[in-house]
Length: 363
Ligand code: PHB
Image (tube, rainbow, N blue to C red):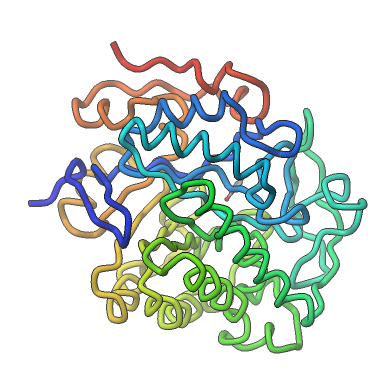
């Protein structure tokens, strides 16, 4: 029987166990939006995870939506991320970077030239973002013109190339949580009348073209995607038929031979079971085109749930978010059934080592 602690080959990734550190925004990048020496230490401490997915990192300056999040598009950023990947590899881990464009979940003070954030729509999200010390309403967006989309896809391709240059084992495209690609997917947001709006095929087009561009640049077996079919995060609302939408996406991107599919079940960081969605049916759709695709699940998994998910074959990989903030040695604690430390919510975003690199391993 397969357990949570057994190794797994997922595409080109060679994972020592099935426990994944989920992407976690920490807002601690410094000048030039580069990860720091403290960031290197933070990830090094967590390298016993079978896989680390880094915090979401913007693919271009306009992709930023929160203060002090790192980028993966400049030479300086590549050099700084190289120190992170070297440290994780030296500690025996594997690490992919999450490629992020926030779309309309941003604020003009973060945008190049103070411009409006871009989206599939010109309608403002009912959502907040974190800048400096506080929460602010997101800014009114501008709808991207059709002729701007090829350049956007090139930004994803460029970021994926930068990720390889920085020594990452792969990339995870952020298609979830009401950010840019999700703003195109959902008919609760996308109000376009061009080839990227309207039908399911049209709304899925941008994600599919991004996935093809990234996979052609670095290999499908180093490319992954994160989706959240029914989360209401960031004012995303609910698509009118998320099942049909995501089954269509599966048919388009599974043939790329992806390393894994990462699915947030339910409301991100919240209720798992509402609204309903048939994850097993979606998994079956992906597996029809890609029989050995690794299936990664996420959202408030307990040790017991994770053990059961892998033992029963419901999932190949289980991603833990908040527990990895406060338990750098989460893999050992799960293996030995040790108590977990609680996260201090006051120190998640921004600041220095407090709440970042100072959570101890269990004695
Ligand atoms: C956040 O910073 O709150 C955040 C970032 C990325 C996500 C979800 C939440 O996918």
